[in-house]
Length: 231
Image (cartoon, rainbow, N blue to C red):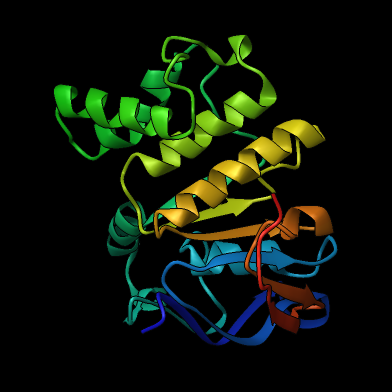
């Protein structure tokens, strides 16, 4: 069974003459353990697609199935529960608290989930070690490079042990070397059977994936599997 499936997924912003169709009856299926890049120019609908399948927004029409469950019909509380349990999110801007050490940053989702302090500390340390920041537990964002800050954000997404990680332009604010380090981390996580889905406008970034879905004008223009990964 596909871990994510969309059926005639449509998103329209505005009404009447000002309506903009961001996604137009998109159908796709993503299998467990895939490493997928959603690629296209600015304004094509790729981020909208990510937000809809991740439960951050609701479709105008169509359905999103997560492990066979129609999450587009859940209420906000049910949706938040599924999202927090199954999906980790990584964004372009890192979204870190400015005066908070890395370990505490990563513990926050567990704090909100009601996990006890001892277990929170253990899981957060393990998540930071998984992104090669085990020696930066006490460092604040201004003591870390951009690439390290994004790896803290990945650890924070990883700490709840989700089956899926979604990332929106995760290397958009990084230089090429830091971006490559972050993409290598995603590859390592995917080797642990975590499904990775990330949005990018950059062909070199997309080349790290095993499948590229190209979006244009709210439609899937091309969906191609790749035989191997860049390194």
